[in-house]
Amino acid sequence: AESALEASRRATREGRSVEDMRLRLLLDTVLDAAQGLRRELALPPASVHPADTVEAVEPGKMTPKDIATRALSEMDPALLDQLLALPQAHLVVDGYNVTKTGYPTMPLDKQRLRLLGGLAVLAAQTGAEMTCVFDGAELVAPVLLAPPRGVRVLFSKPGVTADELIRQLVRAEPPGRPVVVVSTDREVADGVAKAGARPVASALLLKRLART
Image (cartoon, rainbow, N blue to C red):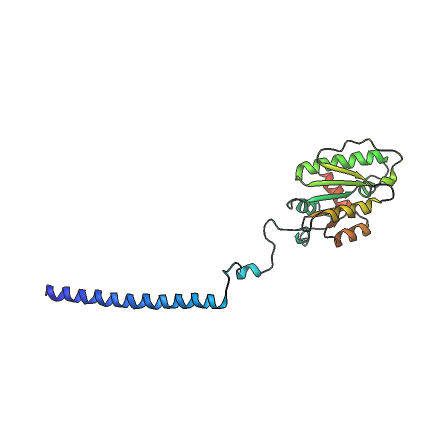
């Protein structure tokens, strides 16, 4: 009985070994055929996956145009916070457009100081780059002004409007960088939008600065 049992086990092992060998041979044949087909078709290694072809916004690659506005009003200060939270965001401010919207009765020097003080606080809170542009045509003499920390202050040259200087700043930025332009001037807003920047109203910035 023991001899018969051992003989049965040996036959089973030998049969399994034969089946394993045949299966391995078949698998090697399929693999060799696939490699030969790849060489024949000169197929490169797969570097793109189907999911890569689906259009969406990847983390860290969001632009001002990707910021959803359905849940936020154009006058909600939270919208500006979302825009300035984008990586490497640059806020360009039409200075007198903002000050003459918010506090037009103040002298120009007081308007400038009030706006720049608010922008300095906003720059510290958000870490965004900020540039405030004033129209040089409004000046009767050179301005002695120490720009606050975190805010670049520019005056347009003679013969150049602040609007044109703002457009130059937008065009100077590389494509894809989030640039937000604050101005209620429709011509400025339309011009910078065509250049890829995101225009927002001066009143929106004033509301946001009122919270600082």
